[in-house]
Amino acid sequence: MVHDQVCAVIPARGGSKGVHRKNLRPLGGEPLVARAVRTLSDASSIGSVVVSTDDPQIAVVASRSGARVVERPAGLSGDEASSESAVEHALAHLASLGIEPEVTVFVQATSPFIRPADVDRAVALVLTGECDVAFSAAPADVHLWRHGVDGPEGVNHDAAVRLRRQDRDREHVETGAFYAMRTSGFLAHGHRFFGRLRIVEVAPDDALEIDTEHDLALAELLHAGRETASEARLCPIPARAVVTDFDGVHTADRVVVDEHGVESVEVNRSDGMGVARLRRAGIPFLILSSETNPVVEARAAKLGVEAVTGCHDKLSALCGWARRHGIDVADIAFLGNDVNDLACLRAVGWPVVVAGAHRDVHVASPIVLRRHGGDGAVRELADRVLAGHEERPSDGRATTTEGQ
Image 1: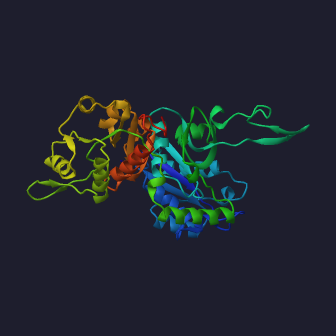
Image 2 (image 1 turned 180 degrees about the vertical axis):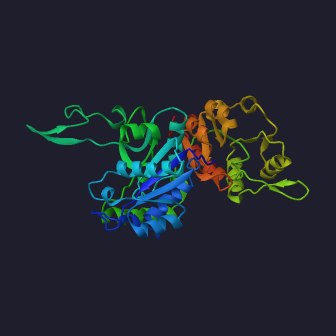
Image 3 (image 1 turned 90 degrees about the vertical axis):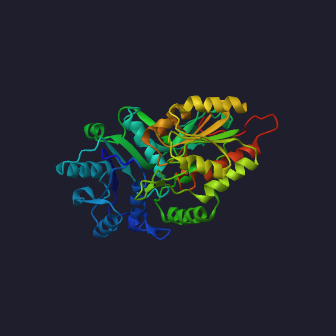
């Protein structure tokens, strides 16, 4: 779902000291500014994308990528100009057109591995009133030092007490990739940190920021590896059973209607293979849908799994199914995409949503898949559950957790 009250602003001036014309430098054959526009366009929460630039070539690339271009004046384009000033100028231009977004997402084009689902999580936190600013940060496990009067001294640790990583307070490093801000608060304060703050934790390998030629070379290596590597390296989910919604999960949430009013949907073959692998591993699987369309039961029959359709109380149906199979709800992975899945997501031990899910369900789920519904999301979940199943020791206790 696209929300007109949310606007993303990408400051992208032509000059740069570290990397010459870095916003136009290609990564995987795509200019960084175009990659940023595409990423934000894939985020379900973003209504419009604005690129603020003083460079005609950047303006052309951004416009062709689908962004609205705001010409940045020379006084806001020098090395001393702040990113905030560019965002304020862009918002003033939008206001002159009658566009006043409730949430502004400030995004750096030089952070090339932003995930649309992470942006959606940040926007959801602001729109639902959880905070005023939500920003990207990666978990950090470093011992910081500074030069003191008597020699080096610890910054975030006591040098005399060497705590184990698991005994230290969890810390994060700001990535600089994106900041979702309540627009009124940003304009009132003039900077990106105000009011109530929340961290949106992103994966460390998504946190690269390009400031040097070395960073760009490293980004190319990471990009090439992502293009060829399997997704088996994703964190395992040691659930004992899997329950999924149907529309928006097994499908892209679209239907085709013929002249007789008969509806049909498109599914993904790789999802079917994922379900088949779960069945062979003895992991129970249920499709739980509020829809009454016979296509749901037909697909379940094809996959050889159970289905409950026309269900208006999904949580009761899920709990009843779990009791019949002797499974604790805490051991279930539930995959959803919309607000009617919220009760189930909040009840199970492993709440999972597809990429591009409704903003409200992102708040209820710490696990967001890389794949969209109908585009291999079920297969991605199946692979992660199977990986967790393999790691489960003989006493049945899980050895891997994520976001719990």
